[in-house]
Length: 580
Image 1 (cartoon, helix red, strand yellow):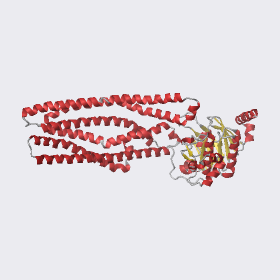
Image 2 (cartoon, rainbow, N blue to C red; image 1 turned 180 degrees about the vertical axis):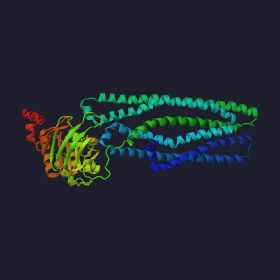
Image 3 (cartoon, rainbow, N blue to C red; image 1 turned 30 degrees about the vertical axis):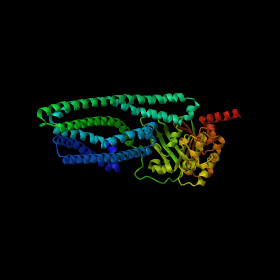
Image 4 (cartoon, rainbow, N blue to C red; image 1 turned 120 degrees about the vertical axis):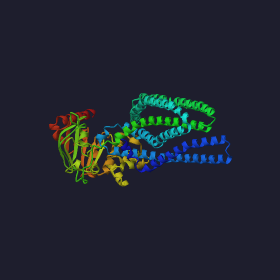
């Protein structure tokens, strides 16, 4: 896992190394200052000339300035290295997610991925900053201060034999009890983010059912869980301060009492006032170093959970990849299913699709009907290779989809889903997802064919109207028509409509299908629908049931021989007659 994250340092290795050097310099200067200060105190006591006092004082001032510069340099380069590292981690995680297939994405919830890209990366950034600054500074300060304390204080340094073990045991005990609460917080962040995401996306549903109070309670419960865990952990960590104060006071009392006794008994020949002042300073440095080390331990343990979660994404290998010599040209829009079976989970006992054999000629219009769970969407998702078949093969343009370059294959296939997405930006910007180089005239033509031009022009800003995230400021039918126009701009070899006209009336649906015949006559059109009227003019209609193709034929043929198709047709037409 460490190797995985070290790869993210990349161009920020130099700032990280410079930070380490600055930290070493700062520590060396800080442990030398008490040494020179002690000599200065002793010299003043011995009535040294003023010129000597000024000279040593200037040396101390210069050392303090050097220490300040080292600290400032370490802070500057450390911030540069840590923020750059976090940017690389964020970019690597995002790029890895973009390479995921649907199978990979199914392993992670949206809320979990958002938490990993925000909270977890912030924790890892903080851990990296502490690693190149405090995690270097604190141990060095501890070791150097111990050495200097024994060099200058002799017997007085025995205070650390008592104080250091007490502080170490206390800090480790505090950290041990605080860690479980910190670990639990990150899993609860996922649930809180999920609650926020669902509430924002489903705001109209929430208000429609007057469930604001319920949503508030749900969010309050998730937020309260995090608050309780953090409160528990912070209460435990807060014990660091009184423990530290106790050890500092003990060190001060011991040094002053024992040191004064030694000075009086030896008349200053063994130890003097300057050494006493240095011992107090070194004692403070040693104890503060231990305090920082304990905080590093707590932070690193917290960050370790975040690192594991991020590493799960960074090490997740996309289940789909290009072959060694991929085909980049899709010849036509013909589609063939040859003995296809598919399972979402290879360990599953039942297949989502089984025994699919089908030939769709290029330019044909194919309708697909079937009940919920019949496998309609699963079938069409195999065409642009959103999933790979478990058995058999799917061919597009006479070539197995697994032999294509994935980007080239998907560039030749347009899918319009029932719940398609519009992104924040103008209508023009959303439409140009289909063709970034499309002219304004082409945008208008595509919208006219998708029956979207009239309502777009009704907006005050027309095609420059801003679309909110998720398309929340347009209706379901308007969103579907804009998505169809976006797909038409791509001029694909294969166009798949997955129940994507469910929110428009039958007249508009018929006009859209009529536009397909004139605008993309050579494109293979696959239409999943719940309404028979949406597919009755198709060249071929598939009736699916239980993951299998129950029947294939034209409208009249299926009415005569397919009980499933006939039942759906009669229910829909009978309802229409009763309404009339």
